[in-house]
Length: 148
Image (cartoon, rainbow, N blue to C red; front, side, top):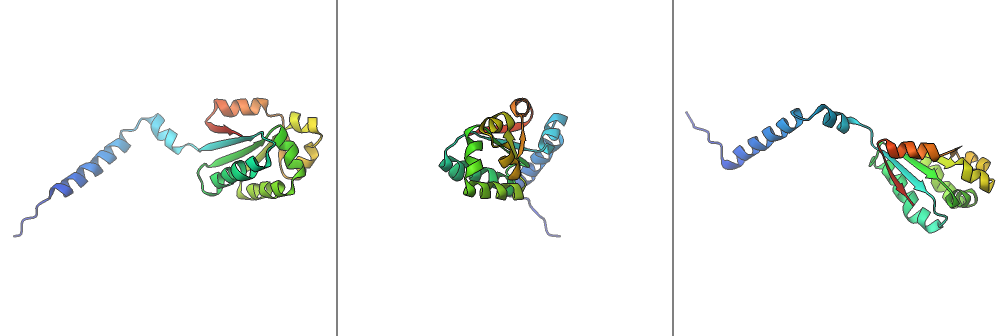
């Protein structure tokens, strides 16, 4: 009968697997629930700078959704960015691509009304609504919020 020996590498492998299994099974209910929650990203775009939109905000927002960096991705158009979006066809095309990819598009109604562009934004598929309370709720909840 041939005798099998477990080398040091094999023993370390078994210990590592066992430690990983124990770590998973000993997680608290809160830790287990946390790992199952939906990840949420809110991108608040306020800048009226076209290059900021094209070279950072839109690129990151679209990829965050397409590449599943976050489950839910919301672009909040607020202030000067709303005015820029209402007149720039290239930015409008990019926003359409984001919408197609599943990015939620919203704009601050107070701002868009002040610029007289609420209808234009709605025609682009952007939901126009008052955002003060909604942004506050996002900050209080599990959203990761970045502002540009």
